[in-house]
Structures are given as structure tokens and as C-alpha cells.
Image 1 (cartoon, helix red, strand yellow):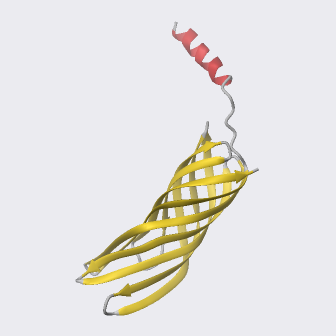
Image 2 (cartoon, rainbow, N blue to C red; image 1 turned 120 degrees about the vertical axis):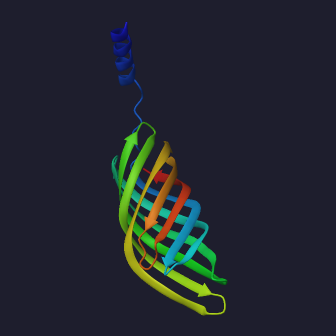
Length: 177
């Protein structure tokens, strides 16, 4: 009986419809939570805000894509030793994306670089800005519905002089065949 069940299941799996990924150029956007954390000499800044990103990519193969994003992590805010501090972080990043297509769902991991700008202001102490290029990476999953895909992802930006700069977001992309 067990052998017959396994054989039936194996034959059924071979007759399921194929869920090939839509390959090509894609555009999209995401909204989520951006966060900045810095711990220095026993003092901690831990702020977050609503952020967003605009996505442009090209998926030439089912398992590989390249992606460029504009990301705005919002204005993270925290009171440190009674002083209100705000950090506004934006950037443009570029990633190589490896995908694992599983029926109508893709799991993915990505690695690349971010070119970032950060404006920091402290009430009563003025403001300053910094910029640079640093390593970035992320993981996520997306459900595909033809050319439309809904994605959930986590990204980490290794920005200098910070402990954590990251974003978790939910978004949509559309692939142009």
C-alpha cells in the first residue's frame, strides 16, 4: 500500500503545471521600517522610521537577477542624554540576486554595495552630514502571480560609524517580458 501511494504521488507531481519565473526587466516599490542604531562609549542611539524604496532590476535567468534601488530609510529619531537626535539616511544600492524558485514562490539572497548619504541633527547642537559607499546584503521571499510579484525582504547596510542600519519591507514588482 505504501509503495502504491508513493508511486501515485510521484506520478501526480510530474503532471503539475510548471511555474516558470517571468524573466526580464522589472520595476517596483516597497514600504517598510528603516532603523539606525549606534552604541558608543555607553551611549546608545536607537531610532527607526517608515522608509521606502524604488526597485529596478533585470532577471535574465530563473536563478539570477541584478537590481538597483533608491532607498530612503526615513528619519530615525531618538533622545540621547536628553538631546533629540535625528538621522536621515538615503542611498542608491546595486545587488547581485540569487533566487531559488519553488513553484510560484522565490526565496532570494542578495549582496552588493550602497552609496549612501546621512544627515544628522541634534537639537541645540546643529547638524552634519556624511556619505560613502559600503557593503549591503539581504534575504527575502516573493510570491509570483504572472508578471506581478509580492515580496517581503530584510536588508542590512554596513554603513561606517554605525552598528546597525537595516530595513524590513513589503513591496510589489512588475516584470516586463
